[in-house]
Image (cartoon, rainbow, N blue to C red):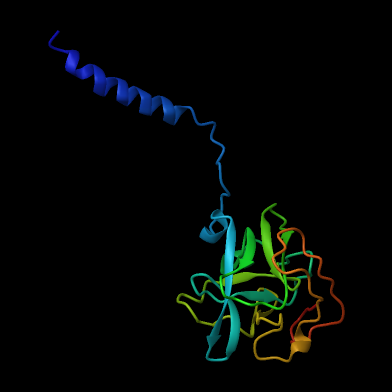
Length: 192
């Protein structure tokens, strides 16, 4: 009888070990390096920067679009996506944010769902380390031009002609219904 005091802690330890072994190894959430994507819906808001008003994540990281992308396909994969992190999940305007164009999604080549705004797949830039930075704006990198996106869907620092895509319904979480035509006036190596 002197060893009975070990029974309850022993059962508890066995239950914990059994629960840990009971996992089938399949993650229950999205496995991604984008913490916002794991939360489901990503809140997007606007922020005034030294160069103008841009769209940002809830944490204040500037959102960018790649001139080589299309409304239905991201052309930033592999090493490109290590510097330009795709914004994954679904999006909604943050409380109080009034955005004239809509959100949508596309399927990336790796099967993940990437958020779009006004037909532009969205990214954050690893060179922006604090809220409000716009270090990626106007960069010619990873095979094309990168632009901070404005609420109108245009590239920061260019005319609204830089964005030639149509608009979709605000708050959409399905595939973007935005169309695109024309070419970018961004001067980049690719465009819409």
